[in-house]
Image 1: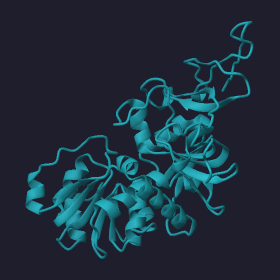
Image 2 (image 1 turned 90 degrees about the vertical axis):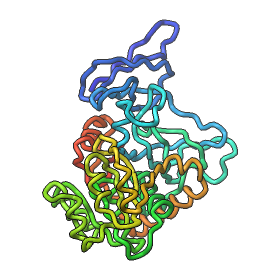
Image 3 (image 1 turned 30 degrees about the vertical axis):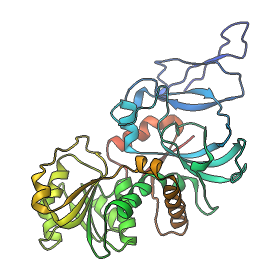
Image 4 (image 1 turned 45 degrees about the vertical axis):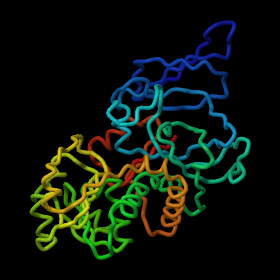
Length: 363
């Protein structure tokens, strides 16, 4: 990689033009007119694009406004929706330029006025929506949660979205009863794995559904009792077989695509089908007569919107998840880590559905 800095004029000797792109492909230039010494590295998406078109450059250091704190980011977690966001296919479309990565862990570097519950040096985790793939970020202090010394930054960064989503789904949307059966699609992925672990903690019998035996064994090591390989067995028939013909009481589906309808056809009477996401890429069009015939519910789970509408409950959930992770009750398993400059490679792991657990960036 190269980092060519030049003076833009005699009048402004401290202005720079930063040119630095992932994989040493200098195909674009991003200008940053900021004094030397107050800039940081960031991955930027300046137009809808694929992972290889993201640019590593320099942007101004953030400043903590009243009620905010600046986090020096040690770990930033990626999710599948980061791919959709940079391609313009996600429901949330940040203004350009922005950085992917919606959850970060690090150390408080500075605090703004009126911030009393955080101090410089505190170890913390936070959800930021986007802009996590950079060295620092300023966020509302109310969105930042402290983490204990025995919880490393990589695992902490991976807690918020996948476990927050799974906990909201099971506590608030699933109407679960201990002893019920839950089938988890994409069980070895981030959200699926979180559902397996939390489902077991809440007394459910978890059936992991995934596309390989390796992924099923991984899910079984993280809370699943049974496994179903939907690459080699029909999903509908397999779920009926594993439930003695009754069907699963709860379907947890972060995958979508063709698997969604097959899973719905196998659901138990008065079952709850939880719509988590569409990692397969296609949004399924469900025949509504199935809801009638099964007497079942199809329930949406939009953690981000729920968290904004219920900030106090969400914060309590995050504090609980941090505590459970530090105590070893949930794993927050990290599949692999990448330096910030290799963000494209990290996103491709998610695109290829190769990750079992979280993919983490190190700014």
